[in-house]
Structures are given as structure tokens and as C-alpha cells.
Length: 345
Image (tube, rainbow, N blue to C red; front, side, top):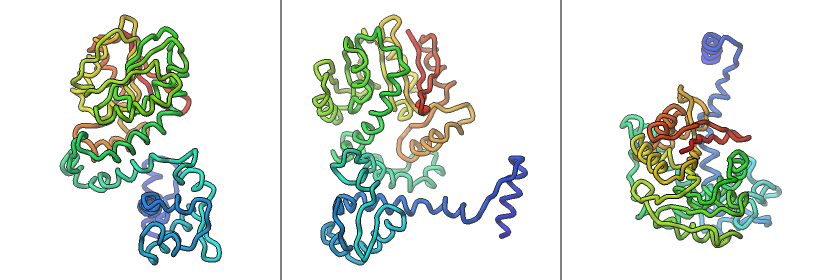
């Protein structure tokens, strides 16, 4: 009770308005990781897929996932308590949501959760990372990471990119674009949507050698595959070439150091035709670095998981673009607040 009054007084003093700070609500936030871990474990064990449209006992599920019966039963009960499964007469089944989004093969399967599960280990090192001022996770070079990691990561980025690409295409001027470069383009989700909007456009997707085979699979499934080519390379080292009308840098700025980003933006300037545009899509922070909230949280993701990554402010990005020679630099947000910084050569 004493903590309640302390919290209440703090908010009144700091914010000048009545706020209620309940210990129970605070504890819910602190312990939210429990449900997250339960769901991710169930996802990794394929519990939702095993259930599918079935109604099974926990013993049946344990046999199918090759796990301990008692532990499986407790996990299933926790999933019921968390709203992810249903239970009746000792039998378990998926909820409508779980069946729609967590069963492999479902049209709306959230395959990106595999990547979320991969992040668990790095986020667990946050205390040590803050002390050290850098990621303390043992770095596994990208070329040595197993193929499953790459598959999960690119699938997660594709699932995010497909709906985002539609919004981004709505706010860009693509009419005069004949050739675009998608830097670190992964699955090509943005490229495909841009090509749908402009039938005269061609594109190149640049990514690492271990990613490009995945890129080519996505290109093969695209109806305009003859207008897309792929290219292997490290975007910091590989020559972009030239004669592009648009260069897209989606979700790569946050991986790099300030010096690397300045170099990358200069490379884009050199590769663009006069009048061509550089489009940066990322978490673009205000000068306080506290907004948007998702960007502030993502900066922590970069701290624990990368060697040099961070989220950067509008001012920092604008400065790098100005130094490179870009003009008409402006920020545009889509309907769902996807942030873009655009400049022209």
C-alpha cells in the first residue's frame, strides 16, 4: 500500500495530473515475459500445429512432440490461462486465433515468431550489455549461422514487409522510376510491390551471398520475375554500380555505425541518376530519442544483438544525406506511421 501512495504522489508531482499506479499493474508488466516465453516455447515445440483442428489430451500432445507428459500438461494449462488454447473435459484445442496464426501452413501463419524466439537469448544479456556499452553475445558471423536462422529471419522480414510495402508505395513517386536498387532487400517484398505499381520498372536486389538463394526463391514466386535480378554482396563493400532512379534502404540503417551509414549514403549518391531518390525506411527517432516508442525499444534490440547498431534521429540522417549532396530532404510517414526519409540527387 505504501508503494501505491509513493507512485501516486510521484505521478502527480512529475506529470501534474492524477495517475493511478497500482502495484498489481506494475507487477504484470514486469512479469509479462512469462507468457511470452510460454507462447514461444509452445511455438518452437509445434504444439499449435500438432493440435491443428484436433482435440487432444495433454498425453497425446506429449507423445507427438516427444516431451515429458507432466511438463507438457502444465504448459498446455498455462496456454489456456493465457488465452492461447481452449480446454474442456481434459481435452485441449486451438483457439480461433491460434488456429489462424500459429499453425504451420495456415494462410496467416506468423512464421516471424521463429525469429522472435531467436532474440530471446540476446535480450537476456541486456544487463551485461548496458554495463559493457555493447553487445556481449558471442558473435556468430553471418556466413557461419545455420540456414534455419537465415530462413526464419528472412521470413519474418517478408511478413513485415508485404503489408508495409503497400503503404510505402502509396506515398512514393514511382512514375519516373525505370531502375531501382533494393539494398539489403532480403525477400524483395518492397521491390515486388513497387514493380506492381509501375509496369515499366526493373529492379536489382542486393544482399549477402547466404541470403540471395532465399531471395531467388521469392523472386521465382513473383509474377514479374523477369523484371527482377539479384546480386550477391556486402552493401558496405560492394560497388552499387550506377544509373538507378531509386535506391531503397529498408531496415538496414539501424544495423550500422554512424560512420558506416555516412559511407552507405555517399555510395547511394554516387549510384543514382540526376533527380534520382534515396528512400530510407527505418525507426527514425526524435531528438529526445524517446519517440517513437517502438524505436526506443528497438535501440535496445540493437544494443544486445549487434556490434554497432542503433536507432538514429531525423537530424543525424538528414546531416549524412546533406553531406553526401542530397537535396529536398524530407520525412514522410505512412498511415500506420511507417517512417521514411527521402532525398533527391
